[in-house]
Length: 133
Image 1 (tube, rainbow, N blue to C red):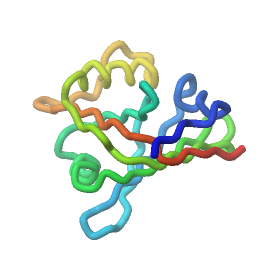
Image 2 (image 1 turned 180 degrees about the vertical axis):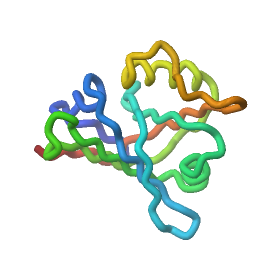
Image 3 (image 1 turned 60 degrees about the vertical axis):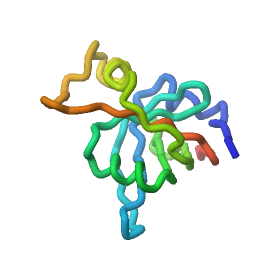
């Protein structure tokens, strides 16, 4: 069942440079948490990573994820998102990481790209979203 981000917390994704903590599940069921950049497109959260990273393996195997964004201007204000990865694609992923680099770094292109790196977009359907503060 799809949910949406409460309007009063959209600024954390759309205008602020709020990093998200992405929680995925390891094969043994233990949690794994990584800071990520993200955006919102057509009601879906999009996260970008490189193929072969731990979160890549985890999200391909187990699509349930959670994200928490803390307001960089007020750490007592945050947004939690729970969801499911519904699409994993390499198509458009290089352009997407450049878009995120513009948002988070003010750079026209992603400056940390590694030789041979294959970028991937994970499209997350929101199943629950709520904020505090």
